[in-house]
Image 1 (spheres, one colour):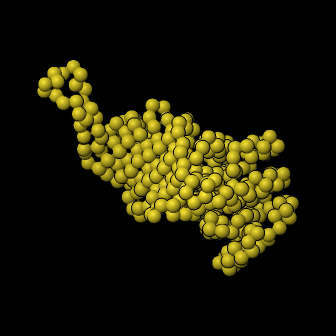
Image 2 (cartoon, helix red, strand yellow):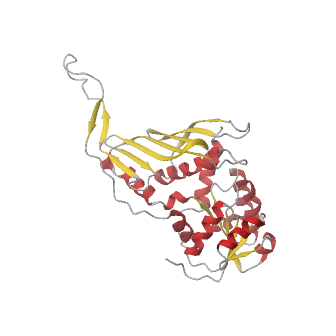
Image 3 (cartoon, one colour):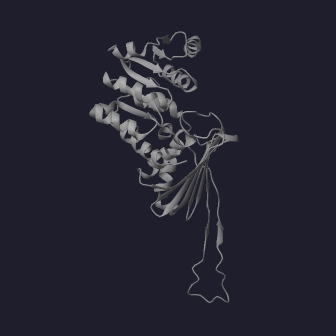
Length: 329
């Protein structure tokens, strides 16, 4: 799969772990020249050594943004660095892809919007789960009335690292799950409770627990970057079924359980003969057939395609930033 050849150069700012992943996908998309800009010259050299035919090093960011041939900028940089970088890139009307959550707070985004207005249409946020086939399946599941009413949703995202020092675990990890909630329910949910534990550093939460209300049901998000094993799960409980998405499984990541619990409607019946305890109903479980895909590849391909409808645009990213700003951990 290749995108149409572009006369624009692609500048990748940040050559760390995630920048390397992005570079690999740009090469898979037949991008012949990637200009790497990273203040850590060693990172840039490692990436150039890995892809000698595609990577060019230029650490002069100010010079790069002034060059009219450099129209596309991909930022794999921390939120604490992004405001200044995006500000300079928008000044020269560049097309920008910025890794989630983008900025340290919504106020930085608002300052850019006030300053640049319509130019923010050139800004995209890297929310990878919008391109995940399993999440797309879950979207169909929650909108299918045959699956019953949604009663509860639980997100678990835990691992040992990477541990940030510029944003807490909510900004780093919860942003993924909030983006999924936004995708599933069109941003229509409310944060009702948030709590975090500052364990390694006084000013930064390492574990967070968030609770949301969506229509007449609830959702919880539990995140930690000091957990002994890697967990990425979504559990959806409905009045007729249960769905488990276990992202760490190599196969059959989604399982549908045809089981549910319900209290019998016995208020009109004689209590001598009927118990008002909940009944457990169990049917046949199954794993739906879902085509595995590379969400990062599809996300970068989508960003470079110049499609009119941008599902990861500045509007989508700003709404998630608003939710994140409400979190007090």
